[in-house]
Image (cartoon, rainbow, N blue to C red; front, top):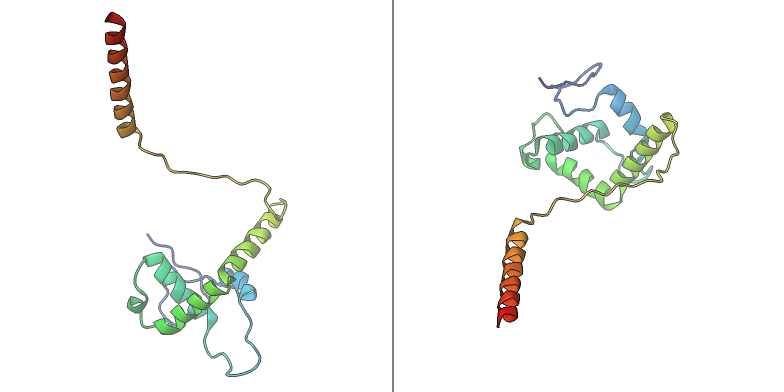
Length: 145
């Protein structure tokens, strides 16, 4: 069963990828503020995030998301701009620091864990066994001559 987020007064159908009210409270202050000049921002940033998270969670195409979310060109435009300006990384870093502080840890981690994938060695092992066998047989024939 999919989990639907808790949203007090939904204005449209709720998707499992939507931000809950609690998640929105955490993310809203971390998003860029309107410039204060030029054309005023007329998009709902929560709707933008819901559109981005829908595509990311479902693995679908930007053009194929539901029509009750903001237009895909707007959603994708914000996604690209925030990626280019490093806003996603900034949000990630700030949330990580908040969480570490709540857990009573240092805000900056001092330990890193690197994980690597296993490398198949069966082919290499077979080749090395053949080479070792060839060396041994050559060595034996050299001694017996």
